[in-house]
Amino acid sequence: MPKSKNIILKGVSASVGIIVGRAFVLDEDDFCLIYREIPKNRIENEKKRFDNAIEKTRQELKEVYNKVNNVLGEDYAHITNAHILILDDPSMKKNVYNLIEYGTNAEYALFKTIDKIIRSFDAIKDGYFKERKLDVQEIGKKILANLFGKQKRNYANLKENSIVVAHNLTPTDTVAIREKLVKGFVTDIGGKTSHTAIIAQGLGIPAVAGLKVASSKIRTGDMIILDGNAGEVILNPSDEVLEKYQKYYDRQHEEIEELRKLKDLPIETLDKHTTSIFANIDNSDEVSHALNSGAKGIGLYRTEFMYFNRNTLPSEQEHFEEYYKVVREMSEYTTTIRTIDLGGDKFAKFGLLNVSTEQNPFLGLRAIRLCLKYPDVFITQLRGILRASAFGKIRIMYPMISSIEELRSANKILQDVKQDLRESNIKFDEDIQVGTMIEIPSAAVITDIIAKEVDFVSIGTNDLIQYTLAVDRGNENVVNIYDPTHPAVLRLIKQIIDSAHKENIEVAMCGEMAGDPLYTPILLGFGLDEFSVSPFQVLKIKKIIRSMSFKEVKEIADKILQCGDKKSISKIMSTLTRQ
Ligand code: PEP
Ligand code: MG
Image (cartoon, protein in one colour):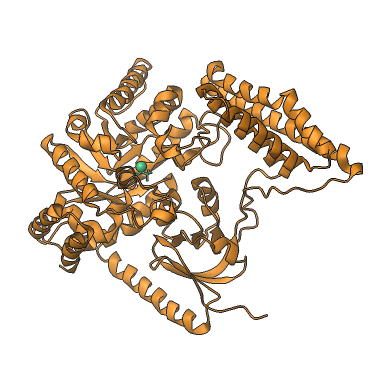
């Protein structure tokens, strides 16, 4: 049967650009749990499969134990022993065996058994049992993964130059995939500022998220048009539609060539007000791209990506070498190294850092909270950063600060690390600047207090919007509520900028809002000092800044602050973009 042509799937624009290519659909890594009847003569074999999965899981837990023990010591490592105890629980094994003897397949028998244990914990209203429930769930998943014989997604068959289609892509997936030079991403779930979207923007490839049914409708090998500008995908395009898109594509290239002419021109408004444009990166390979884009510094280096797709925590030497490479290449320009922001949707699996079982990970043990709980992990990174600071201009930035006490605790550890280095005669920049991200409303409200104890602040709008509006940044069902121009968000941004300026502190913005040309005039009008954006956006933002009058955008930004609803804000904003 001939395939239907021009099937339009609508989602959310996660990264701009248009691309035509063949799809590669990544398998979902959730397991399909179905009941299968096991014939009598296969029952012993089924029990053996279960025993083998238990043994494999035991080996994995022992490896985790050793790693954690080496890095953080026995006090932390013993948590893994609690998992091994669950694995050895005779009643669990008995229950699974019983079900298998009735002819149930091992996967389903395990699922039923774990479900039964969890339900019994639910009946007990005690915090301790709530925690144990999560442990049992985690172990159940590990055994199941081994029973299914698949642990991770397999990227081996992924062809270069394909468009990856998946139900969901975690940042860990995207890091593995990017080595394959894919042309674009398409996902069923996610929104504009999910970390997968941010990685696509960093790679300069188009992406559409929140398509809901893409991974079930599209098959590997299908021809698709990925329109990251409109946030849609066209499946099996006809020749006429392909031709139309080829024209868009050519125009896109002409625009890029035009922008390149701005690279060496100053970043200033028509009335000579100057600002900075820095770049966001997430690994050292992106530095040359950032410099080529005309960025005059790195405003956000997301270091947590170093922790993905590996089995051990990065050592101090690895941190040092990575940062050394970056600062040498950046030469006289500043590099802002953000300490790790693991947690939320950025999981890393090292036993302890495996925080993926939290019920509300974005409100959980994330970023600086994780570093303060596991200071050895933090200290290792800080030593690497400080050592590299002897070779170039580095600023340290803490993510997810929510109170002055957290900032002070982080700074206290930093002071101790500096003292240790001095005592060992290891060189570092004694004047290294330290700043914090403002991405939690509580921090935004006390920017005046924070500004007295830091050298700079950087507004993380991706999280600031999420936490201010109580809207999950990665959830496609609520993208319409995720609004950078909500009056509460705009007022908070203005308040942060004014409070920091009163303390003579510069204010950067490194969330995606800084890189969206729609918001450049208003942020400029608010007095933002530094835009830190994906390298692909640097020249687009520069073009807008160079076309604006600072005096006028300031007046209009003031008017916007008086507005209480979306409609009046959009009306005024449209006059700004027309200037
Ligand atoms: C932010 O929250 O705006 C930000 C820049 O940090 P991340 O996107 O890594 O959470
Ligand atoms: Mg953030």
